[in-house]
Image 1 (cartoon, rainbow, N blue to C red):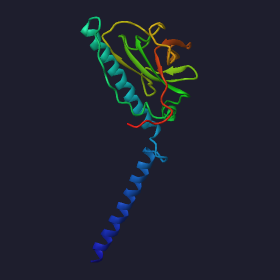
Image 2 (image 1 turned 180 degrees about the vertical axis):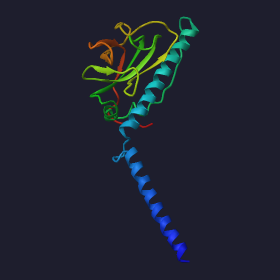
Image 3 (image 1 turned 45 degrees about the vertical axis):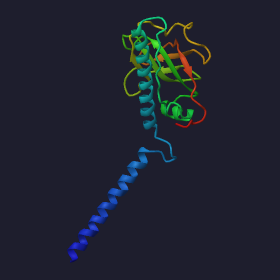
Image 4 (image 1 turned 90 degrees about the horizontal axis):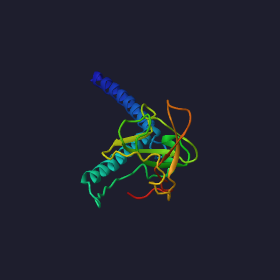
Length: 192
């Protein structure tokens, strides 16, 4: 009978140790303030940016394929992290005054085809752009429409501000002006 008690005590100690390790690992991967970790935010916003680029490119391709005057298409995108308070984007991408930037065309040093680019930019200064690797912060999706609108200021509506300064990581040390749609995130979290 004494042997059974010893096994139970060892089991309780091992179970308690695993519980402590589990709680510690959960605390490290989530927010202690009720908000997601920086890595989680970065991944979630990156997924939303890629989804937004895919949706826009697919819609452009659909309209282009229909091929006539008056062709149109409507797409809906659900954004959760990109429409959260700016503090989320500031923490995830280490930018001040974050804005969502959408443009279309062919970025030098980027993919060889035309497509939609989506990124979170620094609203107060030049944004360093990484096209690949762990620090990738611009997301691209191919489209059928073969026109480069990155440098064409006349195409983009200036209501939201239509240009940003970017500097390609590993490229030239000078910044480049790129035109597109600049969308400020809301100042408060909107209901889903």
